[in-house]
Length: 153
Ligand SMILES: Nc1nc2c(ncn2[C@@H]2O[C@H](COP(=O)(O)OP(=O)(O)OP(=O)(O)O)[C@@H](O)[C@H]2O)c(=O)[nH]1
Ligand SMILES: [Mg+2]
Image: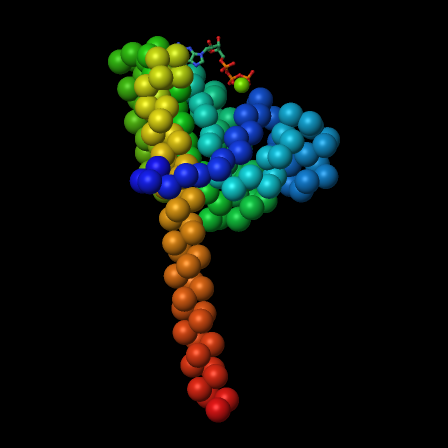
């Protein structure tokens, strides 16, 4: 992306009944292997089924409880090819929720390859934004160190 090459490991987990709170509990439900230590979470639901979004909500709560408020998450609504006007209320609900959560929301269709590339772009953008914010914090800390050094001398 943008002339950079990224090395990414993707873990596609089937639905897990709970988010592993530590690496040991990943073994309790092997489906979730590698989940605990992931850097970005892509939570996928079906835009034609409200219960799949409820599952995403529950996973989001559990992930945040374990990994903190600033964990990186992307919400993906799939099967857009099957959506119709009767789902407008549901659509406005998940759009509002994603906005409230300040999470990127991508609507796609895996079947027709609609918007799939944008999911990967969003993952990389999210990681880049985190790297930039860490650099900024690092720079601020360095500046503080220099200030402290001045005080000591
Ligand atoms: N119409 C349509 N069907 C889809 C789409 N994505 C997946 N499907 C179908 O939905 C079914 C489930 O797809 P999967 O990709 O196995 O879903 P999953 O959530 O990964 O399922 P698990 O791995 O078992 O948890 C399959 O029959 C797919 O062909 C889509 O975007 N549009
Ligand atoms: Mg699957």
